[in-house]
Image (cartoon, rainbow, N blue to C red; front, side, top):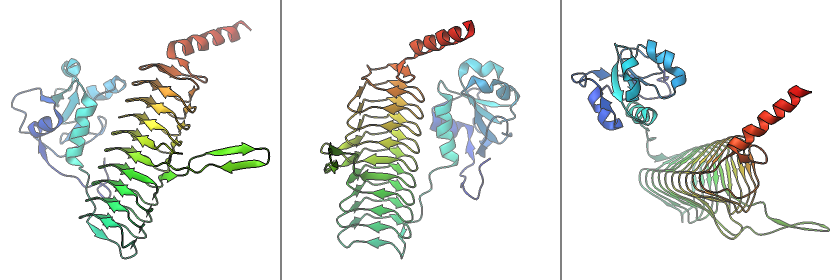
Length: 338
């Protein structure tokens, strides 16, 4: 259950109100006025809690759950515990997300500027911002309204941050323009120089990295991830992208809208990921490639060539999923013969 020391709960809410906010449907007339006080997993929920079933792996927990209300796909409604009110949705997890946000909305920190923050006189800070201890904001930076900046963040010269964005503690931002309502988690590095140099017989010569990082709206970048600025063209992160912790994005990379990049992925310079690409954990993508829209790249894959839209690949070098598992089966068969 959520620890009240760290999470502030709202409510209670009626079943009807939760249905309206989540897009779900109340299964039984007359139960809409029943009040609920919290959300909880199927195995821990009580009569005042709302839970959900999305993954059939948890079907047994669903059958025995004591939750007062459960969000579930209509095709499983007949198997639900008789004590539970049902909220029916074709997308239970999405509906539950809306319900959980009702009980635990994002609570903005109280506006204010810490005494130890250092803000250049030429910087512009919008109304109702929260700026934590030890923050440094450089010349000509522009901070929108209702921006929250955690302790010890460094915002370099001329950086722009859109309204409603949150910057976690110890992040550093340079050479970048960040959109509205983004979440930049602690320790993120945005706008550091790209890994660009010319190699000669006597050593390496740095090539100036003269681009920026352009980040769209509603983007999330996880803790300790890094996004290099472009070498000339900009590095671009499209609207709605979700980037996990410990991800490295090289210079000139272009992510389309709503891409999902899971932890420990590395994307080399000048590669383009079109809209809605998903890259699973620890995958590596070589430079100067184009990954088509809707492509799914499996964990620990090594991508070395362009991929057509809606391709599903895994392995290193990455191959189509069916081919990969045929190769695994063939190898296993060869080993057994020995």
